[in-house]
Length: 441
Image 1: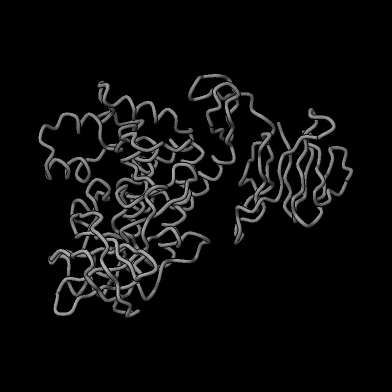
Image 2 (image 1 turned 180 degrees about the vertical axis):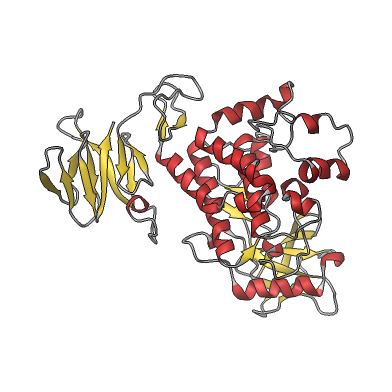
């Protein structure tokens, strides 16, 4: 049954009364409504009769009771988690309450690909990708698997990089709770498509890699010549492409499924060329070694580390002002947009080898650069500044409450008090709260 405007509903656990405001959307499992408790508006997913099973009702109860994963700062907040179970007397159907998304600020990937909403810059794309991997890592560490990772369950703010993960009602305990939904076929792991495995954290990793590839390349990693030659895109055809014989379109060894020589594939070919080499390498591993061997799939932490490092290598083109990404080992850099050669500035290399930070005129030194497990990883602890008396002289200002130690190439030491700056000179080493870093060319 459909719900009607102004119809009253009851929240099972909190026992609050809610009123239907209007219908927002509908999908394969049911309909989504805007509801209110008189003070605040929420979203309500109301299941179709076929989906209104006791198993699904109990699964929602458990999700409401246990709450979103909170192991990683901010990660759990990105999940639009079920808040309560919604029921009607003498009605088999039910639904669940969740936060209402402000769609003015968030976009779906399909809206961006259709150019209905602005695409994110490369730096913001790194942030979006990091947050996605970060949230799914938190989910998996909490013992859950998502089961239905896809672009349809993702929203992001193109201007800030903030991410929201929707449709969390199919989440279950890894390898324990029964799956009512096995995912979207385009994103399923091959073993799930073939019916040889149930959804798990290992199959989630394959789906995550496809989602990230879709974000960066605007294309599916298996939609190449083989898909191009198919005339009837039915379930058997999808099973063949995604499960029985999936081949990566950029596989360096197997060229059977490379992109066709057709203008419709030019966007994918061009956007792949924009991907930094380390990212291309991870995608290639994910869709070759990890394709049929779940133990070799890219884990969330590896995605996280890469996207943070790429963000630390961001640099603006001096001619067209497009944001570019530098990566370790790259000796020359041309702007992806206008092909202007960009001078690579000095770098701050941390002794642990996990971070290399480009020192641009607006570079910020963050807490995560010196302490990987920080509760406030994005707290700014330093910044590149110009000397107000001599704009040609640059330094790194200490924005912490404790003194740093500057170690000069001749071995001499000098304290860098709070609000003071260490000179930006090659060979200078900084000791920041016990973490050492060196300025190099």
